Length: 317
Image (cartoon, rainbow, N blue to C red):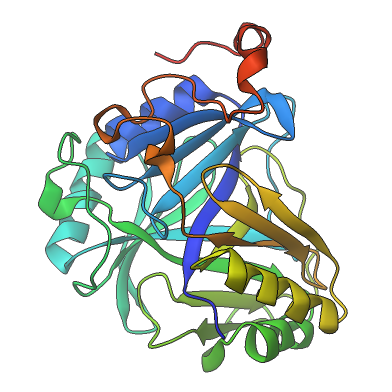
């Protein structure tokens, strides 16, 4: 039993309207579900993804306006890499970011992949990576971005830790990842980046863990990443994962029904929050595929409170 790659990444925004503006109009992602944080219904939970918000394509946001700016450091998920197909797509994106006033680092290479690093308006660190034409992910046909250049989903996440060993044990001994490469930092003594891959690696199947023994711990805020989720096909395997984690001495949330998928949360020893999420039932459960994300969607247990919940949210156009 091993992880089937990334399921979604959940970050923090201070303004849902501004967030929607950037991720739909500039990055061309589809807002596939506009709902609320089920543990804090005063906050939006926005899901962006491919045409149907398939598992492995979702970048999601909690709207917490009261948080200060994010500060990355050990204990943080420092960057989210998204996938596009081909170097021509990256060259097109470099020009598009220029046109929208988004600073970027230009095309670069890392672990055999061409990439383009940049940040969103709140400082969240992002990258676009050439996925080599890997299958999966269907860009939204109604996006302002041409389909051939569209973002197809998640490629990798970057974690910052004080000590690599404990995180490496969780990834390799429990989750089925393999350590496949290591890079030393030229400007920070003792710092190294280790690449972990599951399956054959590539799109959605890589994690980059940066060991920073001498840096201050990070502080989550707007523009930061709250947690990353990994794919498992169904509830039966999720229960097996829960038992496996408990046997290894890790505490979990137990199974949590999120209506669109089922979740299992746990923290690794470095304090980073992981989630194992089922692939289904999916976002078309309560909305037609053609109209995903057009209205506030609430799971059945919150539907009786719709009027009160909507009154506490700022409208999103």
